[in-house]
Amino acid sequence: MDTVDCVVIGAGVVGLAIARELSLSGREVVILEGEDAFGSWTSARNSEVIHAGIYYPQGSLKARLCVRGRDLLYEYCESRGVAYSRCGKLIVATDAEQLATLESIASAARRNGVDDVSLLSADEAVALEPQLSCVGALLSPSSGIIDTHAYMLSLLGEAEAHGAVLAYCTTVTGLQRASDGIEITTNDEQSPQLKAQLVVNSAGLAAPAVASLLEALPPEQVPKAYYAKGSYYSLAGRSPFSRLIYPVPEQGGLGVHLTLDLGGQARFGPDVEWVEELDYEVDPSRAAGFYEAIRCYWPGLKEGVLSPGYAGIRPKISGPDQAAADFLISGPADHGCRGIINLFGIESPGLTASLAIAELVADMANTTN
Picture 1 (cartoon, rainbow, N blue to C red):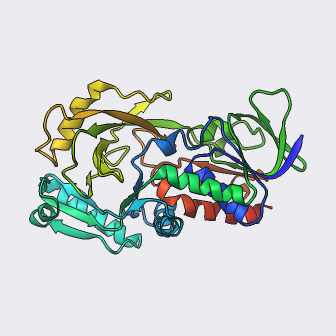
Picture 2 (cartoon, helix red, strand yellow):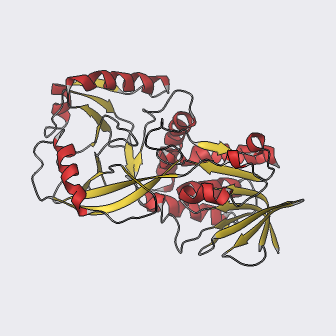
Picture 3 (cartoon, rainbow, N blue to C red):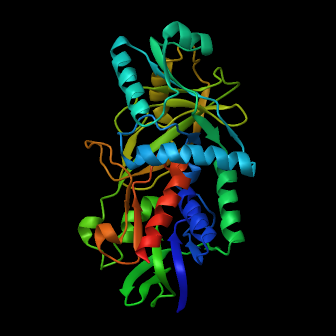
């Protein structure tokens, strides 16, 4: 059995950021990834948005790590040459009742330290985006977009430059507490192949299932996994907007919004569809709902210009009738099991917060060992 200092389970954007942070501190790191490529689940199937930190409850991990992570991420992209654009975002109210919601969002943003947001009248918003239809909007100039693949490639490169090793096609199928670490079985082998002093469970959608493998971990410390599927549709032709356009938030997500890629092409989504299994097919019949939602703020959308794009699944730990859960990042001080740090419910703004999450996990690792 090979012995290693740290094992990070999952090579999504958060797992790679954690592996980089741990390796920069001089720790020996092995990353275990069940797929044959990094970031092929949630990290490759999102809006690629750098969030400002607007929506989240004051003092929550999502609020604190998003604001910190946003600043770290912009600095990282600038210094490493990772493509990004600080294009800004408009959150739009399409009826008078939603204006109060915009004011609440603005207040929440300022409590979170996002002090550059501003409420706009309908005329002011339309002056910025002439194709927009709204009764008011909230402008977030520090929102942006990023080339997620290039970012993950950069994180992996830095981690590997400091000695980290990534093992593809390696699914964790067993975890067992030993006197001198955690023994790890992979790919249904009969006996463990690795022993680690520290295991960081950053398996995203599979994080609760991975945590459940460790019998020493109290079952009540493992939340139930919920899957919220979100489909995206692509717009044919040139985007009529230069900023991200978001409706007011809805249950389970941020509504069918317009995002841009770095080439200026527009896509819409994600919607919210609660599912029981992982399924990334985009149902063409959902297009009707997209047209209806988008025309609330862009009535000029023509019929037949949307085509199915891709789908992602949010790794939630709260269900459709429950309040949105915060990130849950738990170490031995929380669950009493030495040598393991679990990350649950790392949905949006996980991409934005990734470097800040990595800082937090590294701090926890230093106190764990």
